[in-house]
Image (cartoon, rainbow, N blue to C red):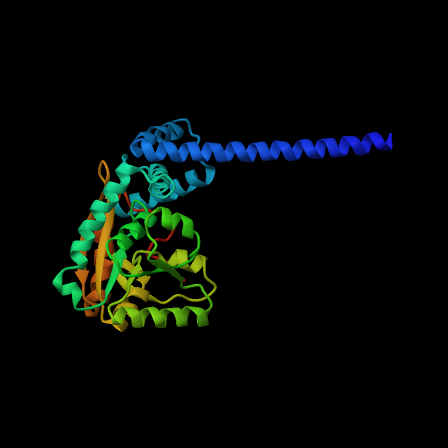
Length: 316
């Protein structure tokens, strides 16, 4: 009896191992098939599946919760709009990011290159050649695409300042997206490492050998939730009420005496780019809140941070 028990134990253990291996291989095969579809087919065709998932209420519970918060925030700031569906914004972002990285979708890559060419023309403008440049995209459509387009618009190395999860967008994905000239610097790294890297990158930027890319619209609430330290903010007015925004980009711009090039991605039957403005370092503190608000009002259906509870009205 004991021998039979031992035989059955190893039999079931081996069977479970083989089943897990089979599931893993099927999962890999499904992913490869999906990437092949994303590469050769129009990525916009996959939007039908996203619409069907929403119609059948097959979306994640956490996503439905975020969508309720986002839609209420939208209503409070801009008024009711039955066309706004934050779940669709999140689904579209996921499809586009997969198509741009793993899928290397041909049509999407053409759209990305067209956006990068538009941005490149502004970077190469005479007024920007004279000073360091900070690229300042909004969190709109996809933050990964914003970085891809910013990096493709220049041949120089780009330092991307992020508030957390600096390694979330892995090196392999960056290479698949065609952006090998970027490095991430998290403001939550150890102070010694962060200071050393920033000093080196700032010296390169002052010498004209590097650009910074910083998302100016990141909400203080998000940073507070992902950091144990106090983040520096600046008071301002947005949407007709007292607000606060991060002051990091302003401090770096002053340190470098840099021009900040603000841009926003939006979706209109394809990925498009809107160059918001070029702001000089001594004007950035005053004009940045206005620029963020104007961009949100212009492209509210594309902004990704509606789900943050307090937005810019965070009281720490």
